[in-house]
Image (tube, rainbow, N blue to C red):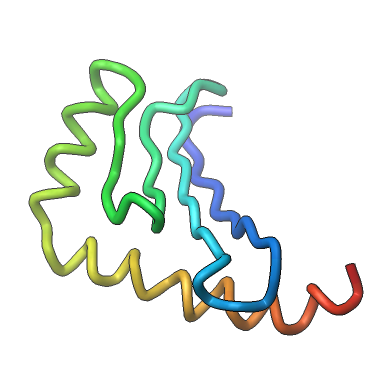
Amino acid sequence: FENYVVDRCVFNSSELNDIEYIRSTFYNKLEIARFSSSLGKFVGYTEFGVKQADYWNSQTSLLQQMKALRETICLNHATAFYPAA
């Protein structure tokens, strides 16, 4: 476990408004930064993570891409898996 990223969708229904997309960045089993679609930006949890989050938040094209992933990934999975849950 050195450096890895975990993408996940949190949803209470198959409606896009009820879905949150979260991308967490970890280093050595410690979460250093996270993107949350409900906030629409990255948040850092360590000194290095705060610096990374500030840099990522300054990249408007990256933020737009991350926001689009909520619909691209989460909505498709929610409509597929929510009825089974």
